[in-house]
Amino acid sequence: MKTKFTAFVAASVDGRISLDPGKSPDWTSREDQKFFHAALAKFDAVVVGRSTFEAARKSLEKRNTYVLSSRPTKIDRTGLVTFVNPSRADLRKIFEKHTAVAVLGGGRVYQTMLDEKLMDEIYVTLEPLIFGQGVPMFIGGTSTAGLQLLAARKLNHAGTLLLHYKVTK
Ligand SMILES: NC(=O)c1ccc[n+]([C@@H]2O[C@H](COP(=O)([O-])OP(=O)(O)OC[C@H]3O[C@@H](n4cnc5c(N)ncnc54)[C@H](OP(=O)(O)O)[C@@H]3O)[C@@H](O)[C@H]2O)c1
Image (cartoon, rainbow, N blue to C red):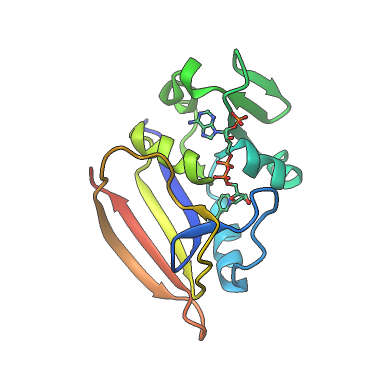
């Protein structure tokens, strides 16, 4: 059985996912939050970066969460939370026992999972905002990935867009 990897991103129109790395975003629409929480129920594991974990520790500790960090020298598990250093571990092997893994960011995590070919689909929620600053959606890429748009849906009157992509290369 092949593990399916799906990324979820909420972004401003200028492609920013956070204005403050220490805080969970408080600018996403109610409609996106509803979609995100319903979608997440279908996943048996999530992967996040250390900053995202620290910003949302309380809810992430309740599910199978893999936290990427350069700090651990070995795979380090406490309760449902596993800290993994990607340069010292085989990410594909770590996730193979799960059926559906949600990739929840931040920017370096999205890029790492994309580069490792551990991203099959991406949901991008575009909120009608321009930040002009903040954390970019993907960080540190070295090659261009191709996407196919599977669906596009307007979530509310303000114009929040939910885009669903398949990663093609
Ligand atoms: N809008 C959204 O959809 C969305 C999604 C996710 C997060 N966010 C927000 O974005 C902000 C955090 O994002 P961020 O991009 O600054 O941080 P992040 O990706 O959550 O965390 C960055 C940290 O994760 C570790 N890390 C990530 N990739 C790694 C890799 N390949 N190898 C080793 N370590 C790796 C490193 O930790 P060490 O320093 O321990 O090495 C790095 O400093 C928060 O505000 C969060 O709430 C928003």
